[in-house]
Amino acid sequence: MLVKIEQLESIVEESLVRIKLIPDSVWLEKSDPLKWSKKEILGHLIDSAQNNLRRVIVAQYDTQEKIVYDQDFWVQAQNYQLANTDEIIELWYLINKQLIRSFLQLPADKYHFTTNVGRTSIEFLNMEELLDMYIEHLDHHLNQIL
Figure 1 (cartoon, one colour):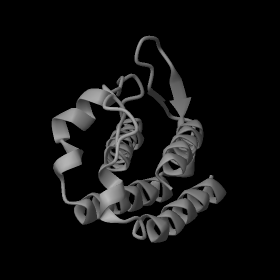
Figure 2: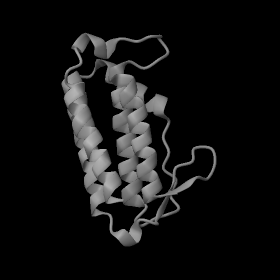
Figure 3: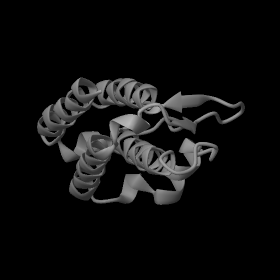
Figure 4: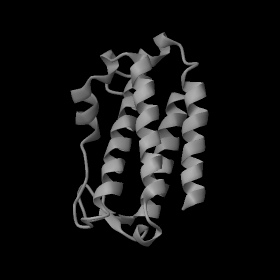
């Protein structure tokens, strides 16, 4: 699991450098009014990190709790489009650093603990599967931004 945590940290650190090079005007562009801008995608990644951080913590004492979120509602409710871009970038970076710390603090005997991430069905993932899912999701959206 340590290798995967290091992979996540590498993705976050390397992406931060590239993200900071994106001009302000590009952050707000939308290919379609119903699609997210780059800023809203980064906001969505903040929401994802927050929810996954909660999953890592809660799964250590309650393996039955279902932690899901309505991603479109979260992005809309937080109005990332109007937020300061530098603040959004910093928040994305810091919440990911906290998620990394939480995975690092996770005792090895709790790697098998599960969390229910299913929105419409029961879908339990253990902590390593959760980390894999998060990295894949992060990569997907960072590719949209970068």
